Length: 62
Image 1 (tube, rainbow, N blue to C red):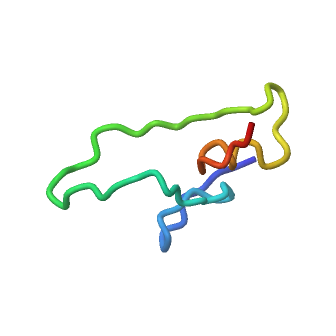
Image 2 (cartoon, helix red, strand yellow; image 1 turned 60 degrees about the vertical axis):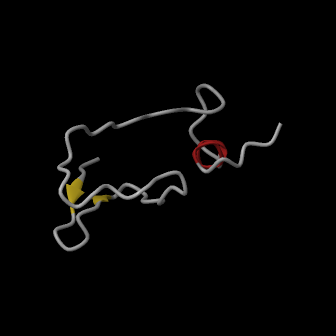
């Protein structure tokens, strides 16, 4: 599968963009110095379902 940056939105396609509620604004005069790309599978070895979404959105229920 090929990934491309959409020049209009600046988003990686076809990746799914889901803005996180866990962020704050970066000051305008501060440049980006680090980019972290994280991959996770919850439960281990399973890549379907909404487990990962729930984890990153703080919705994990015990």
